[in-house]
Image 1 (cartoon, one colour):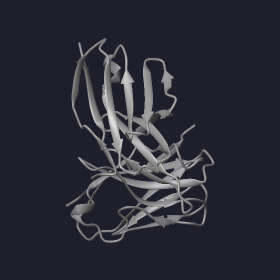
Image 2: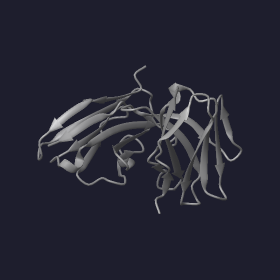
Image 3: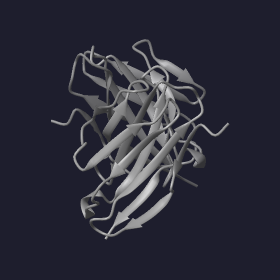
Image 4: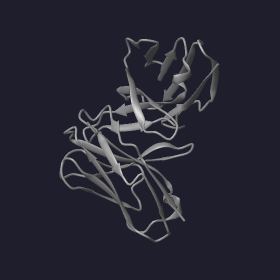
Amino acid sequence: RKEVEQDPGPFNVPEGATVAFNCTYSNSASQSFFWYRQDCRKEPKLLMSVYSSGNEDGRFTAQLNRASQYISLLIRDSKLSDSATYLCVVILLTGGGNKLTFGTGTQLKVEL
Amino acid sequence: NAGVTQTPKFQVLKTGQSMTLQCAQDMNHNSMYWYRQDPGMGLRLIYYSASEGTTDKGEVPNGYNVSRLNKREFSLRLESAAPSQTSVYFCASSEDRLSQHFGDGTRLSIL
């Protein structure tokens, strides 16, 4: 089983739709979680952190479910500009240094 | 405010050639990283430097060497390029060793 798994998509949704992605992780000791956004042929950019209590930033909501070992990203009222690949990042904090593991990404296409 | 700057942006090499990818950050971050990104594989860590003067292997270090020249600069060297090293290379820096700031990437093709 991969350390971090994401459905690659693509998710094709109409503008205005609500869409949700999940990301599962295998190491229950993982402690920090993030969502990044990557546009085509561009670098990844931090979108938001993920907390057990949930984290909301405008139309975006991130959630962590430790019991089931997954994180989620919900996008409400999708815009054309939301089209991108969304990467989840899972971090294991160790004495020797943090280990970051990236998912392969979920592609979102928002259409008119 | 440039953030993380990578050079070159594109490069084509022949098998066996060597080259160095340059990375510099102006955010005074302690930690710097080199990743490669391949289709279906996600970002994989090649090497990282937790602080000036230290470097450590990541997930896929074979065929690469790195130098943390100073706090700002972290270079990645391919001594003898192989077609399997065709990829997009990203440099990143971090202050808290959690969230990362990425450069624009270097698209490297090895023939």
